[in-house]
Image: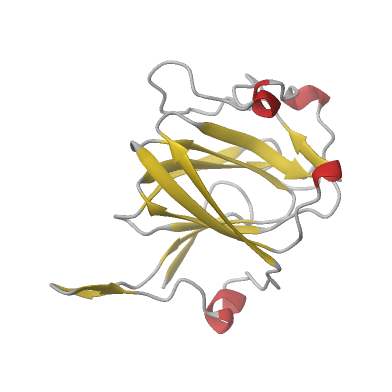
Amino acid sequence: MKVSQTAVQGVLLIEPQIHGDDRGFFYESWRQDVYAEAGIAGPFVQDNHSRSAKGVLRGIHYQIQQPQGKLVRATRGAVFDVAVDLRRSSPSFGQWTGHELSEDNRLMLWVPPGCGHGFLTLSDEADFQYKCTAYYAPEHERTILWNDPDIGIGWPLDGDPSLSGKDAQGVPFAEAELYP
């Protein structure tokens, strides 16, 4: 497994070792000892699975209390996945990193607690799965505006994204509750 540090401190891009032949493939998507050595320890308490149509943008989400670390991957289709550093004490505070995750490249991204997270579906449909280090707590969930100019995420968009009501009403980064 190859683990690479991204532009945002603590956000890691993970490339698993794929064993494949004409019958199919196999890889370890989670192995506690290998991930712990890379600084991803969990414990994971919740797994989530979503399906989205092309052009759906979800995020930028985070929990101000019970912050979640997320190990994310696309198991069907492709997404452009984004992590935003919301930790004031971090040297990469306010910066973002984005990576295409797909069923073909099988890349995963570790988004540590204290970072906001979002993704845009690039394929006709995508299944997105992620392991979380804290339970979902809707009372603590916050959303930053997906196109906030202070963050300046370079979403690979053709037209306007499809947003939920919650995501369309995200707050600007300058007004967001952030981590110390």
